[in-house]
Image (tube, rainbow, N blue to C red; front, side, top):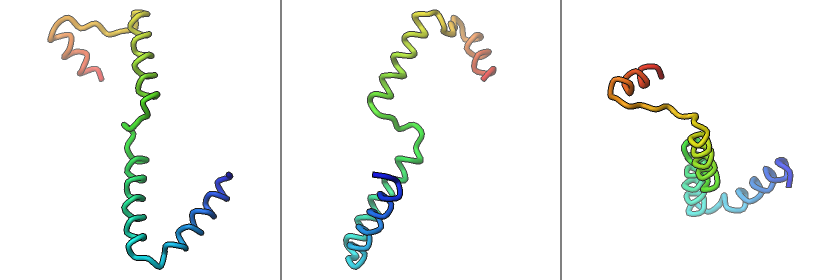
Length: 81
């Protein structure tokens, strides 16, 4: 289904429920949830999360890490960000 077809289908479906205040309230509530999900950059799928973990583990195996052995080194590192 193309974006144009999907858009048309959504408008047809909305027209069907437009005369029901209860259904419109439910739709508005659901749309708010969808918008919140899109706006939150920290949300990710399980697969995305584990891909990031795997990437980090591989970087650690390759020695591409920041080693911090003291509070002073930690302060320096944090100040450099």
